[in-house]
Length: 336
Image 1 (cartoon, rainbow, N blue to C red):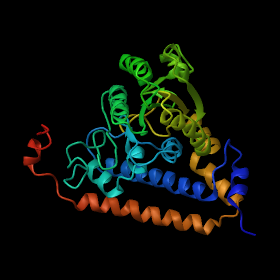
Image 2 (tube, rainbow, N blue to C red):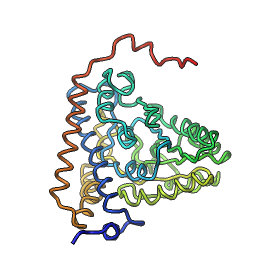
Image 3 (cartoon, helix red, strand yellow):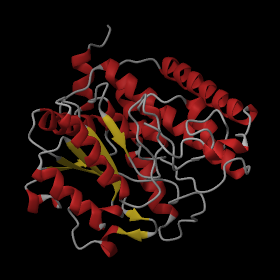
């Protein structure tokens, strides 16, 4: 007998249910990010990606669950760990991989690399290398939404390390003062670069950091896409209703180092392996789908399709031309 959407939700058992189709979509998008990032890591090791490269492996449920609650016109901005946000916003794997490898066909024409690529068409505003700087820019995007009289929201992602930055609290104040439709998403992966959150922050409940300004917040299991979706739905509804900003602290975990050059000796291999075995967001959804009657062959076919897309993006990037030196003088000043 075919499993219904309601039955799939019951199997998930994590807050408000997702339908079978939503779980399948989430599985696809998380797996695309995972395989894309693994390929990016390979290309970095081959010397084809220069500069810094921060992988999103392990944190996929955060962006996927949240993106499911957004609509066209909503705006995203994040830090340098940005490839996942790009892919869920609808930016193509080809364009993102080409930018990672510094090619003319990349989203920033090969000038931005991993940390600085943008797409106004997809309402993705970066990719920012300065810790915490994107948060202040994020409330600017939210202010634009309110100024134009839309119900669109802005989502500003930042990490637990950036949560102690001064401009973050200035942004909280301004967003609360003007009731800006901004969702502050704190991706708490336990380590700000190599420093554990317990050693860096007197506040261990980061979702409460907006309380002095009356900003509501939730702490969420960021390894569970259904839990992320449920919390994001509340935050988005809050912002669209004109009630001001909202904070979501996503408790997540990155499997790789802070960047590709980080050996991550500040934590044990056993710690990482334990999270992989017990809390992996992709395996979690895979088990839900299999228990709900989805054929494993269908999931393997999906993975093969994703692998082909990722391999195509790598081939496209490696065969694309490098930017002409004249590109140094483009997109420097916006002419009215």
